[in-house]
Length: 160
Image (cartoon, rainbow, N blue to C red; front, side, top):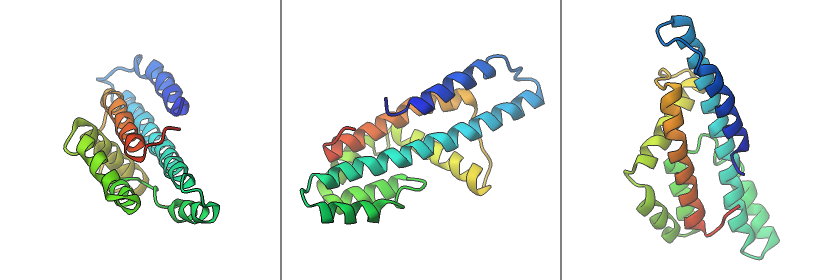
């Protein structure tokens, strides 16, 4: 499973959040810290996985030197992988990849969920804005973001 760390963390945090009192400010603060950590974990795992996917596609060119160059070029591309970065990279491989991907996700619930998690990560990591996501909202958005990753796999024609 690609997302075992995320799934395990969500399960552990769910056990704790179930026992929190939503009317208690300290419990709300604890939930915010849990969500912050989970958002950073999710994006980190996605960064790594996206890099793997594009690396697998590069390997299919059959030229080890070209593949290595592509992988090194992409190695820093997916830090905070917003849809613009994903689209740009897909387009650099082939516009058809971008078109397939955007056809599946543009203005979709997956797109909105992805943007929400990226915005939350940005708020946590760069202390810009505030984290406006509850644990329940994160649990609702997370499966949609996995669908978005599946759309990248489909566009590239690779599955890890």
